[in-house]
Image 1 (tube, chains in turn red, orange):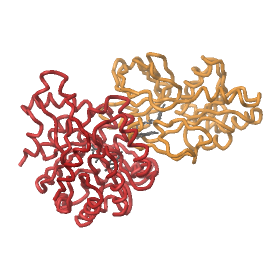
Image 2: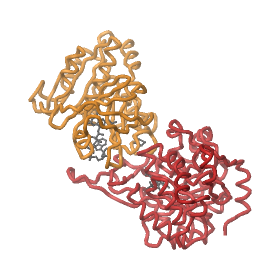
Image 3: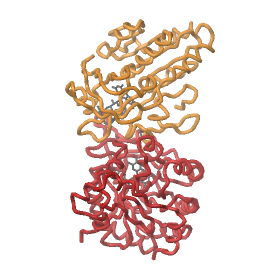
Image 4: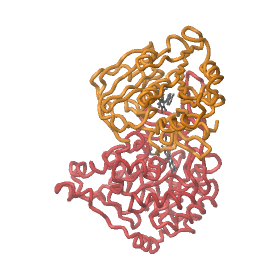
Length: 333
Length: 256
Ligand SMILES: Cc1cc2nc3c(=O)[nH]c(=O)nc-3n(C[C@H](O)[C@H](O)[C@H](O)COP(=O)(O)OP(=O)(O)OC[C@H]3O[C@@H](n4cnc5c(N)ncnc54)[C@H](O)[C@@H]3O)c2cc1C
Ligand SMILES: Cc1cc2nc3c(=O)[nH]c(=O)nc-3n(C[C@H](O)[C@H](O)[C@H](O)COP(=O)(O)O)c2cc1C
Ligand code: FES
């Protein structure tokens, strides 16, 4: 079970004050409550940029005050610096894209020493630390480091990256290994642990259940779907790595289905993602069972998308007769 | 960088597959030649990155080759249509560094050498204009595959520069590659400072010949503003993103 006392302690030490900024804009909107609760953390709204599509917030903070965001899941961290895969790493698809970035990041020491202090200057709420690895020890190393970071409210464990060999997704495609990673990470942190699952499996609900049984505080899903494109003129794959992760609006129905299946199987909160690009999508994801929602690829083509969704949510709620957004979480039986 | 709404004021066909589009709107943030814009096109998920070929406070010009569906669609848009554009993006060429290099080098290198290959020429035009404004007349070498690819010759002449033109098949200008006239120039201007944009094999060949300079790179991009790590490259000073730390890199930092 979830270590509640530890989490309560955590949420108190976070000195987190819910702000009502998004609800003051007009008297009309004040009655629509967008706050949600993730394992003791109150988010002003359920909108969170997804790992790998928001960097460490700096580029977006130049465009708008990112403090309006419910939280931020920052780029996947590994113990050591990684350059990632050769270029090209990006391919376009109808209503989506492939990426084979391959977890490029400066390594956990630089992330905690340089990126997180910089992020704290532009974002004052708890953030989600997305961690990755190639062995159980890698996950443990990152989790230990993130456990010490005051601003980290949740640790999101990526066991679903399709872009790295021997590791990453491998842990997320076996219920037993997913549970092992969960237990190992849980043993070194008192922060809530969300396991981020891969859609490239036959029984996503079974893997989610295994993570819940191993003590996970929540589930994040979905990561990207493994995909491929070929340049028919050159008779070569578009991506240097041949295959990559498919994301964007095209994958929304698959993501929604998986969020629904997992919500039927577990009692812990779910962060839903995959193709979300409007306030309607956020509401649909929540109806399927998500407590909060991450926005990925949409940030890359419209850097204002999270802001637009947050501003639109109260109007959508009004139109749909929703007073408190928690009413709709998992309304689909 | 921010999103601007720009309106198409003209589209002109320069060659069978090369078009010039002038866009009107707030362009006051553009700070250097060599920067680019990322254009949202209806029906395409990713934006299309295109270099700024010329700009004023309230207009900019792009020149592009119709290589695929997105650029073909762009060439068929009607005048008056509005486009969502993220801009300006990238670092651009540093005019200060060019000036500094000229003042430091031997007197024989009084002019920078600008080299554009094919559809890499448009940002070189913008750079040439910027240099002329500062009283520096660059030497310009423009290389193309064939006569049917040649662009911007008259525009360069109009600002007082006669570009040395090469074509691979010899149908226009000198037959051969840009490196041939460049090597000839180097016999006189040993420490020439070069600024270049074009296909990577061309950049690499120039890199081997030139003493110093600035090189403009290209990569498949998702965001174009530094968030996705889709466009990373290794340099002597660590990993850089071509979209934000580039597209212009300095000669000495480039790793092939
Ligand atoms: C910084 C920068 C500046 C550029 N400036 C110019 C310019 O001034 N004039 C010009 O003609 N072209 C320029 N390009 C190349 C231009 O972006 C591509 O030709 C264009 O995106 C092709 O789109 P498409 O839909 O026609 O081709 P498709 O092949 O159908 O496009 C499919 C996908 O691949 C991407 N892609 C295809 N070719 C390239 C390429 N060479 N570089 C980057 N992405 C590519 C597209 O953006 C799209 O995401 C520039 C590229 C970059 C990165
Ligand atoms: C360019 C890019 C980089 C990503 N990097 C990571 C990562 O480092 N860690 C991770 O857990 N997920 C990563 N993802 C997956 C997203 O967080 C998200 O799960 C997925 O893209 C589905 O959501 P979307 O359709 O809204 O993009 C990445 C996605 C993209 C497009
Ligand atoms: S294209 Fe996204 S970081 Fe350069």
